[in-house]
Length: 265
Ligand code: PXP
Image 1 (cartoon, helix red, strand yellow):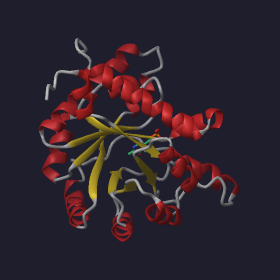
Image 2: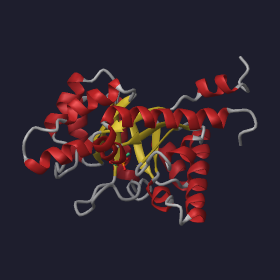
Image 3: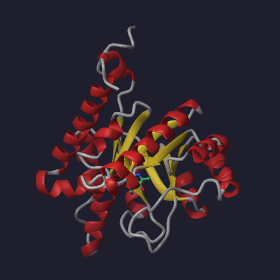
């Protein structure tokens, strides 16, 4: 097979889209009832081409609840990526639910969303047994981390098969006014992705991505999965969830195909 042709290169690196449905639950919880149902949203996202569903069970259950995770696991035909703080409580829930993957994230009660990556260097002794326990149960562990070379090396040392690179700092600067700063953040992501893959890690990315900011990130060939939530749920208000998911998937695939085209650098 000629790996230089765009189709072969594209096929070899077709990225997956995981849709995070947390904020459907945020809207539901605003009124305390059962609607809108995040599991229904998950089914719609899958119908529109999502390759997986991500849900974050926070310690304070501010959006996704335990019952949502149980229903997602029971009903979904695509992989469930269970996002959780690196705590004993969440590891026990993961071991019970048996999702396809667990993405360990930092979590602070007072934060509005996941701010920054997990401190896997400072928390290495605590994380190593958790990663071992989850892996032994057949759950794929992903660490949500900053795009940093020392962090990539530590992830490999800890035996995690996957890292998800935090794209929040890049997205915050991707507003047309901070071009140089966004470029520097993007470069950091590119370098971490290349190093991570050389170390044998599978590379995912997520946080704050929209139709525009996802394009340069989707051109990074090492990244095989994107997890996107807030923007898609917001966009669903205007265009419907299926249209938003289908468009995001098309944007990601087009950017990757462009990256694989002859002469693209
Ligand atoms: N990946 C991880 C690990 C996250 O914590 C989040 C936010 O919950 C996302 C991806 C999705 O980020 P956003 O909702 O900003 O698209």
